[in-house]
Length: 392
Image (cartoon, rainbow, N blue to C red; front, side, top):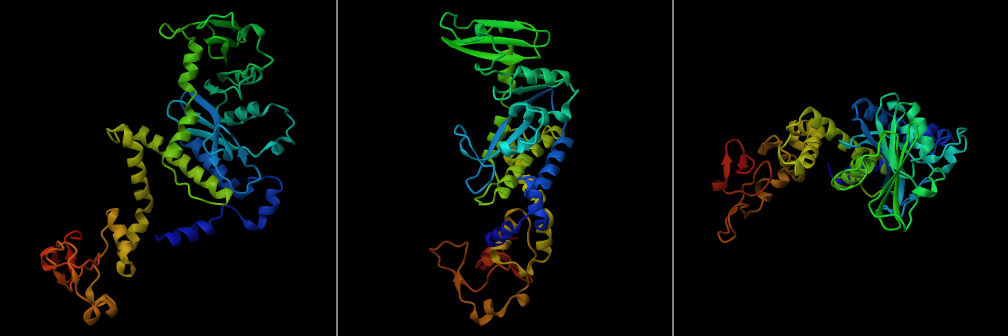
């Protein structure tokens, strides 16, 4: 389609019933796209069974327009945008569950009085309860309270802990007297706490309900808890990187469109993971698997429309014919009798052959009936119509 047609479709695109939107928005800021969002999340959870290790973290969809829950995160590349909570597979990077962050006001009616990080993790992993999986998260989410709640739901927790946390003993904090590379462990019936000294006067504190020993890696001299955390912490960060590398995002002033573009990017990542599980020998070159998959995905989505336009090719413009040929669909040859008289007969001027070098200056009346380039007899095949060598 043309750029103007695409812009028109995007300007008219809506995701809910405008007549009832105001009433729903009074109780839910996310109402203009809530129905589509819930359906998308349900499909993500239905189509895939995650591995034993999952990661919970945040993703920021860059957006600087007007939005009642826009966030500012200095450490993110986009800084301003819409924040999403993601639960992703730590091994395959499949996004299993996701929730939007709508600000503090959405928690006023909450009677549980749990910290934000604890509520987020519990809501994201709710479909995985009683499954024995491990949840890895950073110090914004990790707490002893969350570890106990997940343990009773038969889920384990692994994550870093803030040094300001009241549950951390003073002996686990950084001190100049501690040796670099040393580790200090503490154990309860269900929880393991470790403090590792990577540099002088600096301590990394982790909490785990998955480990119950003080094993240390022989090569790096780091505790096994830290090695496991480094292996499983990057699930959401990798998803964010993949979404930024190949994105469908376009400039927009509507936050609903920003969320919609984010959903499409996540859907493209998830679809590739499901496809690779069903087709492990998709392509031998790992560095271009995703690019080739996205190309095939685009062709598969527009294939019915291309075939319909190819079968009704009489009304196509020259640029549209060329675009259809680029993706591998030859349009039907249009006979000369069906061409408008303004471009045929006496009004048609001689022009140089599209394929002959300029030094020959070979000018002809004949043009290809598919691409409309001027062609000489040497570079065309004439039966009932003229077709150039590229359109044959």
